[in-house]
Length: 167
Ligand SMILES: Cc1cc2nc3c(=O)[nH]c(=O)nc-3n(C[C@H](O)[C@H](O)[C@H](O)COP(=O)(O)O)c2cc1C
Image 1 (cartoon, rainbow, N blue to C red):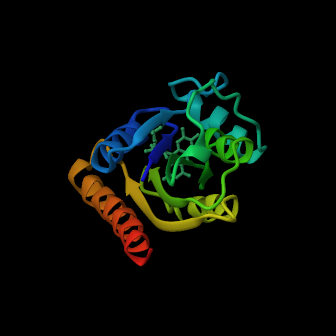
Image 2 (cartoon, rainbow, N blue to C red; image 1 turned 90 degrees about the horizontal axis):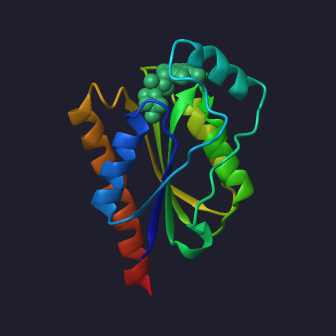
């Protein structure tokens, strides 16, 4: 089973989570690096929030990974203004895939990630969303975050195993 972990991270929390999940799953790791991301200072809330609210497109970096070649895709994103980041949204819209097992992790500063996860689910028709987790301040609450990621990874592994056994 080939697994790809795709993530966007402005401040490192989602990167920390993505690297851990990729290691645990033996997955390839793809970091999205949009050319037009917010500055890493206090203006990020304004610039990033506006980009989400106005549905601005992220100009994604080039990458070699082809989602179609994977059995399972894990998507990781910070929560911005309660929603999914332009980078992950753009990835899903511009590189559509179907028939995949999908895991989602959302990183927030303590806010609710349900709306973001629901947004993302809505863009993933034709795939099986196996498990989703919401992580609060991963870099500050590492242990709790890693335990939740373990749950996500185990759910994905068990789901893929039971499919294999059914064959
Ligand atoms: C533009 C912007 C909007 C944000 N909106 C929210 C929000 O609605 N709820 C929340 O809990 N955290 C919000 N945050 C905080 C981030 O989701 C949180 O710090 C996350 O862990 C950052 O992930 P990263 O380090 O991978 O970029 C926002 C951060 C930014 C930059």
